[in-house]
Image 1 (tube, rainbow, N blue to C red):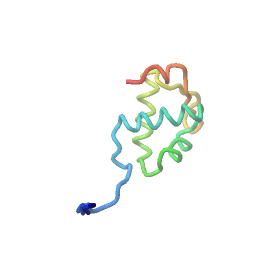
Image 2: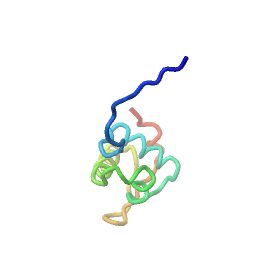
Image 3: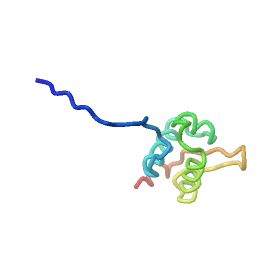
Image 4: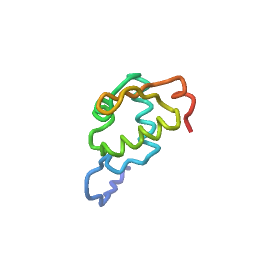
Length: 90
């Protein structure tokens, strides 16, 4: 016998308020697959509804921690999967 449960959920689910640790994992998985990417490429693949500023901040933190690499400056910046990317997961 199946019972139907009705949830009174109003609104749609989006990634706008994604938690930092989930965004961290999405970025790592993306770079694990593509190895070298600009912020626009990463943003498009992981979900363009995620605020770009949030993604930019997460990338900066990951570079500072040595979890991913970075080459280039300004609009030519590329983020890189490194040997450390697979090791430094918390």
